[in-house]
Length: 504
Ligand code: NAD
Picture 1 (cartoon, helix red, strand yellow):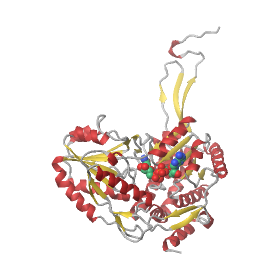
Picture 2 (cartoon, helix red, strand yellow):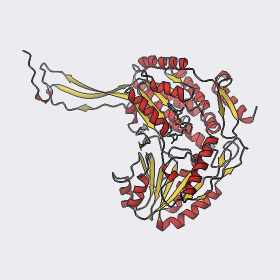
Picture 3 (cartoon, protein in one colour):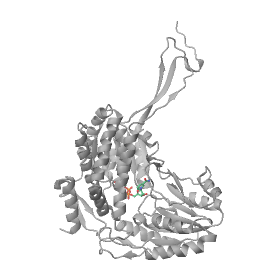
Picture 4 (cartoon, helix red, strand yellow):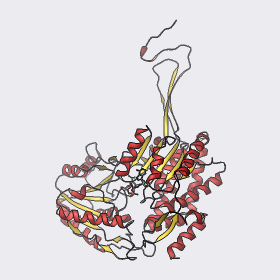
């Protein structure tokens, strides 16, 4: 048994996950750290998935009647269990998704933060009272639980995305069914075990409140097509979202779509370049370029281009690439060979379109089965070819601009609309950028990069990013149904808009 396999076994033992949950199954799980297979996880059959969905639908009928602050207590306990097991789960994230240690731990911290947020929210699921035009009438709206929420997640935030959805859905009175990425079932098994611990401490959680479906896209499709699941929250590629969005719409379900990004930052003449440099480094190279919010396009004013870009190239040349488990490197591996190939293809296409490539080559860290790369910086003459696409790898395309209008137009002239930022100390530029005529993205930051969002704000993006919102602000409304109530406490029946309908 290799040291990583031993590590996985020991983590699962401590979390109380039985060996049968991760051995002898049909789904081989590879760690991107070395490329070796570390587990064989059993996948659910269609019939088993049906049982899980039916059970979640039944659990909902009980859970919706539990007072919301009491539901919040379950989420508070979940947050505590996550606190107690942060190191173990964080390490498993590093093993399974290849994140460097601080990012693996950061992902679990994000889960803890959203639990705290949701606990407070459990006492704040406010509706409105509205002035009625009729005498002795009251008009109001309330928010009720929706039903079972299907959560489909991507490999790159294997557990945080579940928690953004789960913590909110649970306090909103919904049950949850999780279809994690087939590339990251281990962290899902661990998270489910932690949920069970919280449920046990809570006592009386209805069976099936939180279901887990380990499997591939076929199981995802089954979940998406099931009308017992009124909300599908799906995170992943735009290709997946196009299929899921269409399928959910056909049955008039509600889809929360969190899809691909092609995020840009604009560097203006007044930018603090030292700060910009650090922000760009994290935004473009952090998580080995495998965040939906990764900085992919840097749009630099011509007056600072020749100062910033050479310094940036130095940082790219010096960045540490290595194993997230045995080194303190800042850049870990790509998830798999397909990801490496996609990166190389984009670099070839960029060169063909006139790009000057610096970096991007493979780095041998742990042998032929793992895929580590030096992040690539590509100076492009124009925004064409691969620059318009999301390649899920550390490639930063650099473009030059002369006027802010031109920079904003370049930034917005892609089909994705997730995250964006501007580096400026000029208040006019700042306001123009975040105005209605500025960035068209769901996230528009100032003097920070486009990635690394806090849980307090609503997270998501426009256009082919899918339009969904998760996490903070009023994203909870996506997990509840709005009901408008008109209450007549008088003894007459006036109709709205003065309509007369006297029947004697
Ligand atoms: P992916 O689309 O390959 O897979 C995501 C999930 O969808 C997996 O669980 C997969 O099994 C499932 N799936 C695929 N096809 C399906 C179908 N037809 N029906 C139901 N389920 C289906 O994505 P990935 O490679 O795991 O993740 C990377 C992508 O995710 C990138 O595009 C990234 O930008 C995006 N992402 C977006 C956000 C966001 O919040 N906007 C967050 C993280 C990742």
